Amino acid sequence: MEVAPGIHQIRFTMPSNPTFSVFAYLIASDHEAALVDAGWGTPGAFEELRTQVEQAGGSLKDIRTVVITHLHPDHFGLAGRIKHETNARIIFHELEKPFVETRYRSYSKLLDAMADWLLSHGVPEDEMPELQTASVPARRFVAEVDPDAVVVGGEVLSLGGQDWTVIHTPGHTPGHIVLFNPARRLLISGDHILPGITPNISLHPEAGENPLGDYLASLHKLADLPVDLVLPAHEHVFTGLSQRIREIEAHHRERLDQMVAALNDEPKTAYAVAASVRWNVGEFSSFNALTRRAAVMETLAHLEYLRRQGAVEKVLRNGVFHYRRR
Ligand SMILES: [Zn+2]
Ligand SMILES: [Zn+2]
Image 1: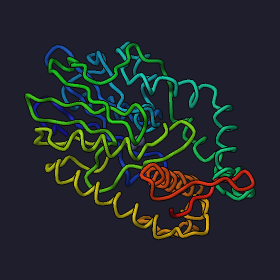
Image 2 (image 1 turned 90 degrees about the vertical axis):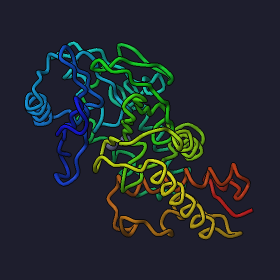
Image 3 (image 1 turned 135 degrees about the horizontal axis):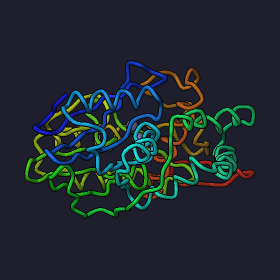
Image 4 (image 1 turned 180 degrees about the horizontal axis):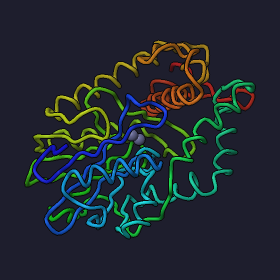
């Protein structure tokens, strides 16, 4: 689907959930093309890419550059396969680069760190193994590849003959980037800003110290950007960037209030807080392992933000971190 002249949205079906798609964007001129994000690394996804590039009047071999907004499997999955087929230049943020190794090549160290992390935040012993390995199955949807170049934000990349500015937007991941085209007032927002859902903001062993603080600062950075159309990685393209940013900020303020309300003088673990707050996607006890783990990590990101604001404090009891209101 052409969402702006010369820019085609490529839709990939999620292997585990056919109703939820991830989008890449093909930016094409007469001579060359670039792809932003690379879908799941499944044979089916590769055919989805080939078909849609051809429907757009191009060919895979036109793709010279692939920019990855962040290294989650639904965005990075096909990068290695595309590299192999086209020899395109692979670009992502330098802070995502270590994850090629730690998440996709040799992840046993990360699994060990994850086990300690989960136990130290109150996950019960019997639930720990399931939560520890919850994201392992997604690894098979990734053909990983090292970048040919890394960015840090501020660079202007020529993609499909147009200038796109890289903006570093940490929060959802440490090295998440978005691409801004000032001449055409377009923003490719990855998972940073989505029209209806909010991206998961998690504190975990590879997340940095204060991901929610980073995320809110990254939202603020884009609040006055002159953008007419936002091209996100999920749901649908949308207008009204500043309005959407205000809604997401309000969502996190509300969530922070809920977290404070769930605490009192009695110290609670992040796991206990996660189990007691209301989630938009259902009951904590009915979540699958991946969602339960994401809920604990999202809770932690909020608790750590509150701790840095001075609203809560963190205490260590028998090797387990607890939070209480100050
Ligand atoms: Zn993501
Ligand atoms: Zn995503």
